[in-house]
Structure formats: structure tokens, C-alpha cells
Image (cartoon, rainbow, N blue to C red; front, top):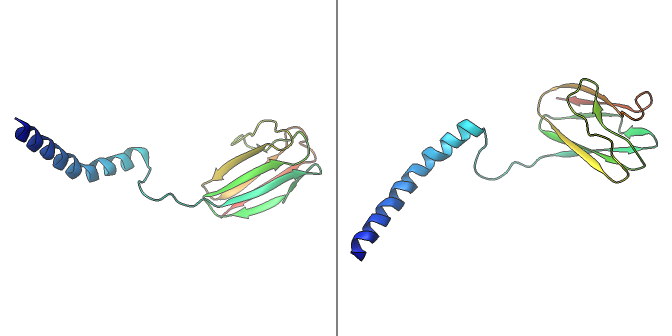
Length: 123
């Protein structure tokens, strides 16, 4: 009896190992995610300081993460077109977003909209 169980288990393992590539490929098609080493994401930092975004203008490659860091008080990073909104950040808090598509993205601080403005250009 033990021998037949071992043979059955071995057969099941061979079957599962044989199906693994097909299952992984199906997962990639449905989720868009790839198995394997993670891609390194480039991060660019924008500081919120002296009632300004530093740098005010930033040019990045598609796939880059921009991280806004509040270095003085109450600010936000809010897209002019509604693509993102960090919400109000307090001193030391941060907000990040990955820019995947090329374009020009203007933004402002919702607390100080007339004086705090910035632009991200994605190439």
C-alpha cells in the first residue's frame, strides 16, 4: 500500500511541475505581473519647504516614482486635473506616486494653491 501511495504522490508532483509554466503564463496574462526579480524603481524626491516645491519643475522617465516630503508644515500634492491627491500632509509626512505615462503633469498645494505650484514632465 505504501508503495502505491508513493507512486501516486510522485505522479502528482510530476504533473504539477509540468503544469507550472502554463499556470505562470496564465497568471501573467490575467494580472499583468511577471514572476521573477523585481524591477528597480527610480525615486525622485520633491521637498515641500518655504511654501514651495523644491524642485518646482522635474523631468523624469516613465516608471519613476516621485515622493513629496513635507519639510515644514501643512501641505499637499494635488494634481490640477484630479489624477492624484495626497491629502493634507503634516511635517515629516510623505506621499509617493509612480508616473507610468509620458506627459506634462501640473500640480499644486491645496492649502496654498496660489503660491505653491509645480510640474512633472514624464518622457
